[in-house]
Image (cartoon, rainbow over all chains, first blue to last red; front, top):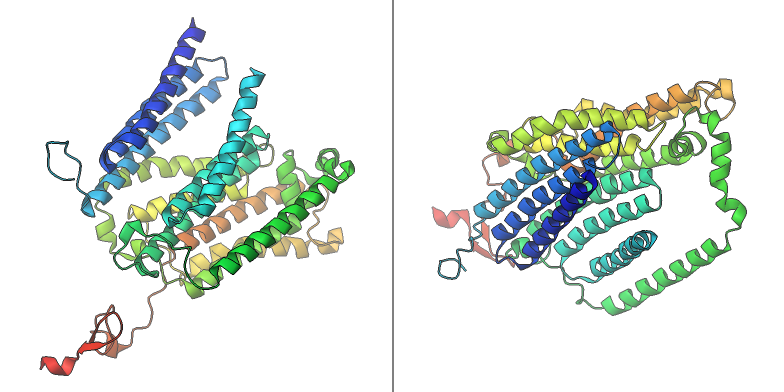
Length: 103
Length: 356
């Protein structure tokens, strides 16, 4: 049962990484790409970690995995914020859709 | 399952070659730097697959992390001050195709690299199996070093020479930066301006203690498992950059005595241990029997601090405040010292006399 759940979570995690990569390559502007990258990576990484800790392993390793996920989560969110703010301050116009302004 | 693993290995190898080729061939300097970091991360994956977690850690932390950060730093400065940088901004592109003699130079470089590659391959193929069995030899005499991680045993026991000279090279690099570098302007700004970002500050407050513990753990576990001074130092240097960027720590300056002492004490201790124990052991950098573990641990600890300070210094160095000539104190430092306005090609368009 846990094995099935683990595989499901790992597959979902891989899917989110894939979606994030597609977003990184296909989204129209810097801010959208940042969104795709950090959101998908956070969720994807969380699912991968959730899937992995269901596998048989030492509890210390599980804790290390969760800690890794937490650190990646915090770092990715902060880096996203810093990049977006820096781009805004340099005057990079956000894309506002085909009907909107900018671009 | 083994087919899958094989496929993974092959894709890592192919990706590695593709990334290296692209990084070498691209004309976009920023792309080259980003690809270099990607190469480092892929290479550390390859090291993991080859069963060398120590090298993988070092590659990820130093090859991709620290070197990548230094390259980004250099790129930023080039984009600001390099040839053709004035209005290119973040889209700065190096032009590798122009200039006389460029083609000859390129052919010569490729030729030399080719000869080197062929020579190295010949040597590699020609190595007798006996030398490839060095690992066995290390394993059998590892006990003498007092540590159980063969990598640390080699780095600080059998081949302590190499490590000593690596640390020497780092200290020399730091001194070179002192004499060349004019400081990272990102960090030379008013600390109040830097401090305004609560998000970065929160991240730093969260991460710094964890990273500190992890660095101690890496040094400690280096004697029995993956880890060691260089990896821990890279981590500490990263914390230092975070602390500086979030305004929690003043940028370190090359003039500060603490920086000089911390940066060189690893090398000093290394040499002192090497020479100081000679009366008992009879040879340079030999450890007396039974003391290997203690000496290695202390050396690793002090080296970690030194290397961390050196790496941080390479990244951040803000020069000590120069003696300002009082006559120049009121002059705009970005302009001509006499207050004239110059066009880009140096023609004088306005002199201060005309204003009056």
